[in-house]
Image 1 (tube, rainbow, N blue to C red):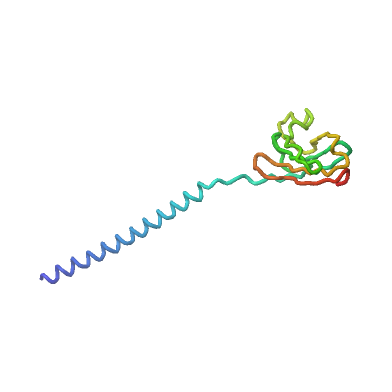
Image 2 (image 1 turned 90 degrees about the vertical axis):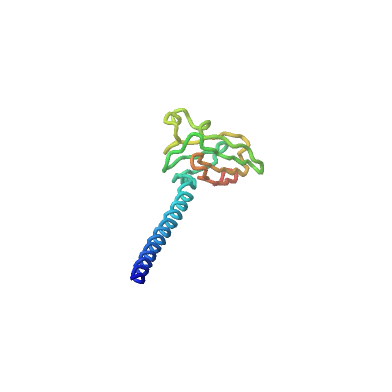
Length: 148
C-alpha cells in the first residue's frame, strides 16, 4: 500500500509542474508583448508632409509662388530665399499674402505669395518652402534670371 500512495503523489507533482510551466511561459509571453507594445506605441510619429501643388516663377522684380491645389498651408509656412550666391533670408508666407488671403488664416488654392526685390533681376534665385506643421520641405526651385 505504501507503494501505491507514493505513485499517486508522484503523478500529482508532475501535473502541478506542467501547469506551473504553462503559466510561466504564458506570463513571459504577455510581458514581452506588453514591453514591445509600450516601446512601439510610445515612439513619436510625425505627421506626413501635405500634398500641395505650388508653382513658383520670377517676373522682373517679383518672386511669385501660387498655391494651385492640395492642402491649405499655415500662414507660418517658411520660405527660404537665396539670391545669387548669398543666403538672403527666411520669411513667413503671412507677410507676403494680400489681406483677403489672410482672412481664413490659411494659404489656400488660388492665393499668391508675392515677394518684391530689385536684386532678383538677372540673378539666380533659389527658394525652399517649408511646412511648419509637418516640418517638411514642400517646394525647392532655382530660377535663373527671368527664366524658369
